[in-house]
Length: 246
Image: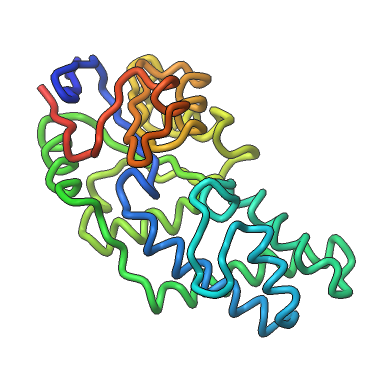
C-alpha cells in the first residue's frame, strides 16, 4: 500500500478523495460568479424582491455579490441549496412544489450562465501535486457537495479530468456532506474500501463525512484557521500542494 505524506506525517492508503471548492479550486471567485448568475436569473424570472430575498437567505451581498463562506451558497449540498431558492420564490406567488421546480430550473440556467463567465482557478501548486500523486500510483477521486458533472467539467478545463477515477456530487446521492453517502459511493465506484481511503477537504462537514464513512484518515486544508476543522481532522495542512506519495 502507498503512503500519503503530508507535512512530515504519513498515512497508508490506496485512494485519495478530494472535496472541490476551497480544497482544489480557489472558491472565492467561483462563488462570486455563481452568486451573480443566480441573482440575475431569479431577478429576471421573479423580480428584484425575490432576488434580494434569495441573496439574504443564501449569504450573498446583493451589492457586490460577495459570499459568506459559512453560508448556504458556499456550504449547502445542492438539494438544500435549491430549497433556499424555493423559499425565496414561494412568497412571489408560487405554490411550494412550483417554487421547488422553478428554483431547480433557475439554478440550472444560472449554471449555464456562469460557464460563460467563469474560468476555474486552482490553488497554487495543486495541479502539480495531483499529477505527482497519480504518477506515484495513488488513485484519485472527487466527492463534492456541488454537481458531479460540473466538477468533471471544471477539472477538464485544466486538463486534469483524467487524473480522477470518480466524480461524485450531492446531486448523485440522497444526502450531501456531512452525511457519508457520497464518500461511500465513491469508494464503491472505485472498488476500494473506505479504510484504505483518505478524504481531503476544507470544512468540518468534510471531516465529519470522512469519519462517518470510516476513512483511514481525514485531512483538513485549513485556509480560515477554523478551530472546529482543526479539531476534527487527523492532519491539517495549508494546501493540497503539500501532499506527496511514497
